[in-house]
Image 1 (spheres, rainbow, N blue to C red):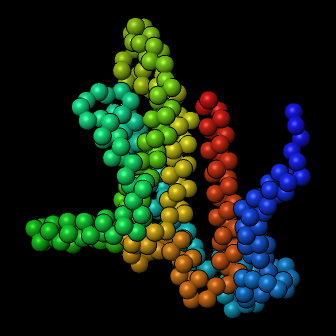
Image 2 (tube, one colour):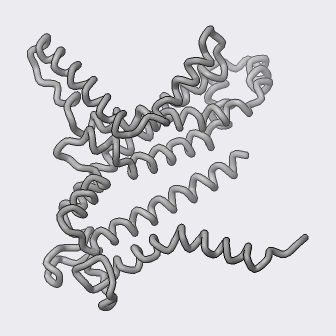
Image 3 (cartoon, rainbow, N blue to C red):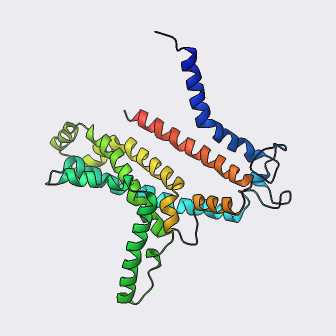
Length: 279
């Protein structure tokens, strides 16, 4: 086996430096004792995480209601998106892999469209559609339907419109590998359809279900374009970060980014382990 040349090693080093150097700089300057999120380095501090604001005039992210509320709003969106993506994605995968009907191939291709449509266009389309639906229903029912107006419920629907496709593909790929003779053997032994589903099929699908849920959670947390079009007064974390950058960034942005990197890395690691265990 040939050993890699110096040029090849240099390329690999440059590639990973390009990938991780900006993230490393952001992480380091989350601990900078300065009101600015950039060099020069002025000493180590945890103020941007747990500070009360007495030193730099602004509290750390774990003490600031604005940041805490935005993190909470992100969870309020991400958890329903993940649960719905797994639930509906399982049904979709079952239909795509088990059912036979005219036009199935066309419908499967149409399901991929939200992945290639720009997030801004998708967000505007969803906003316009549900605004018209809300106007019509409010005129008919003579009542306010706030859940169809910009806000967290509409953000959930907007994110679900494309995250659901990814969850479906993950679960369908796992279901495609399933040996259906196992189900037939269980039926021959007298098991009901519900029991076969509970004891044979779902345990086999569990790595994909967990993986799809983690991917949906991850994509929900980091989504910006679609969320920006649909958000109301309760801003999730990416929207708050965008607003803070426009007003004048502090190392609190770096601190939030570091927590996001750690969270994303943890979720990605769990997904990788889950996928490996399911092979």
